[in-house]
Length: 300
Image 1 (cartoon, rainbow, N blue to C red):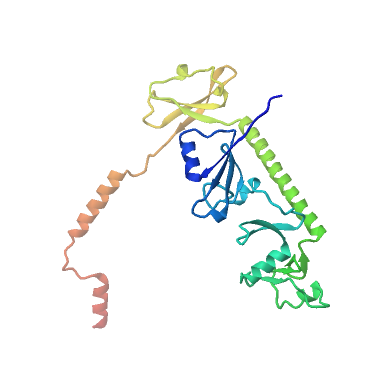
Image 2 (tube, one colour):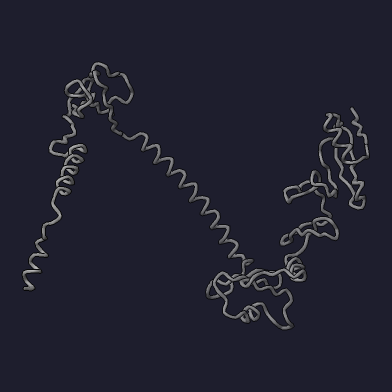
């Protein structure tokens, strides 16, 4: 049976980075990297390029985000209802109960806001319900954390978010929402399929000089196309005959044209306005107006 030996090497992070730069990192060597400037922080342990664990303050190694916790060994065992809280004194993540974590936040002066009430230690003989009733004028959506358990005001009553029926309802709603989303995607796909399969007429305008003989009758969508053929061999006067390819032949549907007879053109309108303005400008200014004449005669 083959035996795999692992070597060990101790050195600075700079020396390890130099090995990486020169592609000289040995995959069968354990590298312990220490911070010479802050030896009290410990160091990082790598097997080749793989980070095994460590407590280095370097941003290039160690656990820098919660996503990196998969590489961090926790001595505490996380049980139901426990959360992870970072301890600067211990320089690591530790597990705590929800209530203990709230206590730490309160002791550190953290403000929860006006819509959140926190009470971790009830008075002797006081119940959760009696404490909740002391909260004056709660609004819908307000939150109270009492003895480590969260409650929300629904506009009428305080409801425990840890109530099994509430948790079951939330789980059911999540499942129903996922089902609705899936159904919407299915329906959308069916609609798209039916729209694609439906008959849609399109129009194709033949260019000047083209005729029905120039149309490819083997095209897949020819039965869904209305062909506009200029009725005088020209496409400049907007007068067309409509044809469709039906049962192997072109059938005439009718004619189509744009008739602008009786409409004034832009040039004619500009000319008329210009002539009218010239006539207005030619009116003498020493004529008395009709209204002035009537006013003056009426005052005599």
